[in-house]
Amino acid sequence: LLRSDGTSVYMTQDLGTAKMRYDDWKMDSMVYVVGNEQNYHFKALFEILKKLGESYANDLHHLSYGMVELPDGKMKTREGTVVDADDLIDIVISEARANAEEKGKLENLTEEEIEQINYQVGMAALKYFILKVDAKKRIVFNPKESVDLQGNTGPYIQNAYVRVASVTRKAAGEVNLDEAKKYTNLQSTEKDIIALLHQYPEVIQVAAKNLNPSDVANFAYNLAKSFHKFYGDLSILGAETESAKAFRLKLSKAVANILKSSMHLLGIEMPERM
Image 1 (cartoon, rainbow, N blue to C red):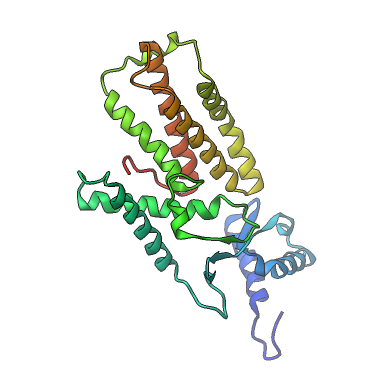
Image 2: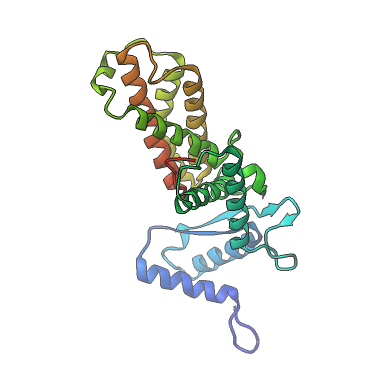
C-alpha cells in the first residue's frame, strides 16, 4: 500500500477516504460509481477494509458501468483521443437546434426561450441515451440518433409531455373536470395507460433497490409510447361527450405528471414547448 519511498498509491488514498467518509457521515451504505476498468481495484479495496476490521466494509458497493463510446471510438481513454464533455453537450444541443429549425415550431418564441428549449432537449437526448441502458453494458452514443423524436429517446418522451401541455392550454376554462367521474366506457388505450400509471411506485422502488436508473428510463418511454398511441387513436378535446373529454384531459395530465416526475429522477427537464 506504500511505495518503497514511503509515498502512497491510489489504494492507500481510497482507504483513507472511505474511513473519512464514514467518520463524517456514518452512512448505512456507500456506492462508488466508477467504470468497469476499475473492477479489480474496488474488489481489492473492499477486501482490505474487511481485513482491517472496518465496521462499514460490508456495506460498500461498486456500481460498475460500461464505457461510453462514440461511433468513431471511446469518449475518453488514457491513450486515445479525449472527447471533452462540454464539446459533446454542444454537439447534442446543435442537433436539437437543427431539428427545431427544420420543424419551425418555435418561431413565435424569443431567442432566449428557443435556446433554453434547445438546451433542455439536447441534454435530455444525452442523459437519456446513456441512462436507458443497463449501467454494466458498453454503449455507443450517436448524437443524431439521440434527438430522434420517433425512437426510444429523451426528446420522444419530452414530446409526449409537450402534447399534454398544448392540450391543457387549449382546454383552459372550457372543460369541467368534474364530469370525468361520469365516464365509464374506457377504451383499451386508456386502460393501458391507467395500468402503467399504477406501476410507477413499484418501478421506483425496484430501480432504487437495484441501483438501476434504466428501469425508470424505460418505464418513462413505455408510458410516453402508450400516450402517443392514445393521442393518435382518440380525440381529447373533440371527444363525443363532456365526460369523455374531461376524463381524457385528466388522464393526460396524470401522464404528464408521472413523465415529469420520472424524468426529474434522471436529471432531465421537461419543456412546455418544442
